[in-house]
Image (cartoon, rainbow, N blue to C red; front, top):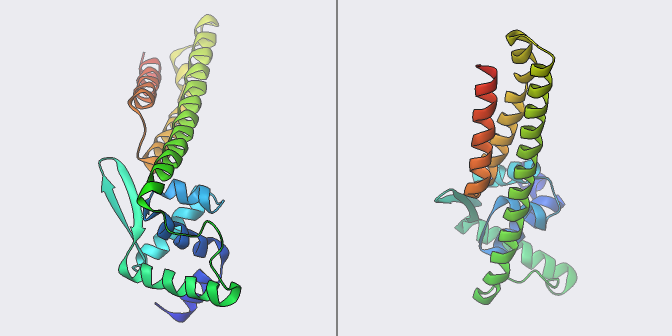
Length: 195
């Protein structure tokens, strides 16, 4: 790892906290790390990508769920960081201990809570979009709008659906009800545009 890169990465708060959080959880989601380090999902994934490029973390897929965990090199860097913290502060701060097996229940509930929030958010965005599409379509039909006007007014909603779809792909673990509702909304839009 180039010296400049190491300084850029680990002399900043968020990357250091991210690496220590991964070490603490052993195996987790990017969204859990985002919550732990109080960052945005985009910034967290950028940090994790840089760490992956330099062999500090690895991603694994289990079904549709993407996990992140430390590599051997990542563990060495964490040990160095822990030693630095101990040298500076005399001990590791509370909460910086590695999760034990009994602590994995807390991790599991934390992960479920994050996923549940994400699913709810995605579901609500899809519902608002669905309601808006139906409302605009009904308004257009009642005013006697022609096919071109319908296409022009409803077409931009394809972008909104694509944004939601991209968000769903980032989270990897979306329940079937949310996926179905999204799919139904997408089909509805297509059918209204193509009538």
